[in-house]
Each structure stands twice: as C-alpha cells, then as structure tokens.
Length: 567
Image (tube, rainbow, N blue to C red):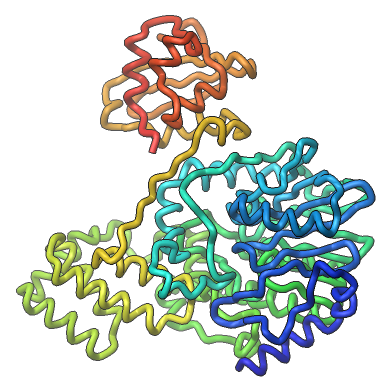
C-alpha cells in the first residue's frame, strides 16, 4: 500500500517539481514525506508557481501566499497566532511586501484564528458574507458543546503516546485563551465576485460544501484554484461528529464541479498536498464529486423506498470506484455518518416508523433492559461476554445501560471504558478513534479535560456587538426568568447602535429598538459592555467610574443581569 501511495504522489507532483526548485526558501516533497494514517507532512513552504506558495505541516490547515506587484495576499491563517507568525516570517523571506489582504475561505477556526500572526496596519480581511453566521454559531451560540465534542474528535486531551493524528494532520494547535479576533473587514455578497489586490486579480466563488460560507478562489493568470475545504485527499467530512448544521451534499458536489469548470493546472487544497496537471486534477475531482453524489442519491433513493437511516447504513455496498481510491479513504469523513446526515438533512429526525415518534428516553430504555437482564452481576457478565467475543459495540451499549442504572459504579465505568478502548482498536477512522479513546479515558479518570475558555473584551473588540446580543436568548436561565417581565434598552455610545432586550415568558426577545415603555435604558460603550458580558470587567466598577449609566430602575437592571449565563 505504501508503494502505491508513493507512486501516486510521484504522479501528483511530477508536473511541478521544476517550478518548486526555483525558490531557495521552498522545497519539493521528498521521498521522506509521510502520507499515512496520520496524514502528516514535513513542515515547509512549498512553491506551486513562481509567485504562489503554500505552508504545509505547521498547523491543521495550510496557509497560502500569493505575491503581487505591490503587496501579498494571504489565504487562510491556520488555527494559532504563533504558527501564523512562524509562517509569516517564512513568507517574508520570499516577499517582504506588505500583507495587503487576508482571505478566509470559511469560518472554521483552523482557517482564521491564526490571523494575528499575519495582520498588519493596512491589511484588509475578506470573507463571504455568510461567514458571520458560521462564526456566530461556532464561536458564540454553540461554543461550549462544539468545544467539548471537538476536543474529543481531535484527541486534544489524550496522552501524547496515544495521539496519532486525526485524518487531516497530526495535531490541532489550540488553547483555551482566545487570541484577538481578526474579524473580516470586507464581505463578498455575490455568487461570483472579483477582487484585485496588489496587482493580482482573483475570482471568488461562493461554493457551499463543508460550510455554507465556503469559497473557492481562482487565480486566472496562473490557472490556480484554491479549493478551501471542498476538496482534500480524504473522504469528505459530509458530517462531523463534533456537531454541525446540515452540510448540503448536493451543493458540495456542485461546488466541486465549479472547481472543475476552470480546468485548473494547479489545485491547492487547504489541507495536505496540492495537485498539478489538468488531467490529474480532472480525474481526481470527478471521482471525488461522484462519491459525494453517490452518497446523496443513495440516501434519497432509500428514503423514498421507506428505508430508515439504520437500514441504509446496514445495506450500503461500496461501488467499485470507491475501492482502493486514495482520496476516498475514510480517514476523516465516514460513509455511515454521511448517509445519516443526508437523510436527516432532508427528512429530519423521524425515520417514518410510528414506534419512533415518541421513543423512550435512554434512561427509561436502560431501566427496562436492566429489568429484563435481572441483576447487576448478570449485566456485568454479559458485558464481559460481549468484549470476549469481540462484540465491542454491544459491550459498549450494555455498559451504557449499566451506567444509566448505576451512575456511580466504578466497575461498570471501567468496563464501559474498556469497551470503548476496544472499539478504538478496530476503528480505522482517526477522529472516531480519538472520540472513543477520549470518552474511555474520561470514564476511567485517566484524563480530566478542562474546557474553561477565556476571552477578554480587548481580544473580542473586532467582533460585531450584535453577536453578543444575539447570544443572549440561548443564555437566558429560563427557570430564573419564570414569571418575569423586564425590558432593558441599550444605547451604545461609541457606535450609535441601539438594542432592546425583553425578558418575557422565559424567553429573551432581542431587537434593535427600545422606547419609553422600557424599564431601564443603559448607556455604555461597546468594549465596556463586551467586557461585562465576558466577565473581564465588573458592572459595578463600570457604574462607579461612569462608564455604564442607568436611566430608570437600577434594581430592574440588577434582576435582569442575574438571569443570564455567560458560560
């Protein structure tokens, strides 16, 4: 298999070896590069054409440099500012021109979080307009659960000796102190947009796929396409186990077709190697988009026949073009997850079987199963039997039954942990393996993840203020808000914005309006309010120093403030 992979890579890179050798700061892929289960690369700056370079192996995502006549364009920035700084220093050896533009291909953190390492005084930052929703959902509305599940997916807290990568690279450089957010200053609103920076003309296409805000970038003078995350050398993550809104598979394969339409000579993925040669690129993209469409159409056909997601997964047979195809190895996405995602995206949670309209809760089902088994000793015997016969999934499910009935039983916790470890040993998908192991080690207290996330108003100063207000609805403590009716207006003094928050019927209605009927009106500047929300600044001190002024019933404001969780 390693011979086959190496031969494949020789074909991929043969067309561009001579171009890469032109630069002293870049280097060609050598025989030593590791393309294996870890998808690990020798860290370096690789030249694609005379003025286009890609940094691979620094972080989870690549970072790309296009050198113009009067300035540089940076495309994606990795997940960490220190990594971004390292890459930028290498890029500056190639071109010491100012970084005129940073372009985010989409709103996943590994593509924008490292931007402070590249940002300069006159840098403009570009993204598609739908970036704003993706950023809000991931980094505000759903940050706690996505962080918890994401850390399991990437094996972040596992011991070093158990870290074997996660499909798109070896590690995710991430800590829980948010760096200054370099938020986009300019947004693309059209399906196709033109951008001219530093003497470089680019075409930007909005191409939903892994995210709704995904873009691909075409550099016509060099016939280069930058794919974002709509293509990488792994079966695509049509669903991610950390959680995501529906990834529209139909849009995704049509987005791959958009790449094909340019007939590029070079295709730069934002993860892993780039491709060279029109025919090589066309052949690989055809198979990639066909695989995505096959999953989409298979799920739709099965749903129309009344099949449930479980049945569709169980009955799936891989078509011949899947087998032994390097780009379709399930080392990041998985077919089974993808089928379920398509079904749920079109039809929702209900599988069409009446018994599943109001299913028993996991706790109640576990109670009834335990009653059938009879005793804890018999349950433990069945778990051991399942593990001994290598029926690890059943062992894990029985362990879950046990833990729901006996939540503090250490023996069952350890059996559950063992069952998940066994599942990890037979799992070929790296992120599934990481998830099994992370949960196993938490159950057995071998790791104790700390998910406390810190961010200051200074770090968040570039985030639009309406993002903070939009998050107040889900952060309302509904029990505390019972029987409350409080109306608070906000006058943001430095931006001349207005917001109204009405707590009513255990919900918080957010608007850009308040009037004389409101109980309280707060006058405060945007950074002070961000600091109060983020708990890096005291509301009492802000009042004492005159940075926050209250018109109306102060007691109402104190009651209002106590109703919200800021975690």
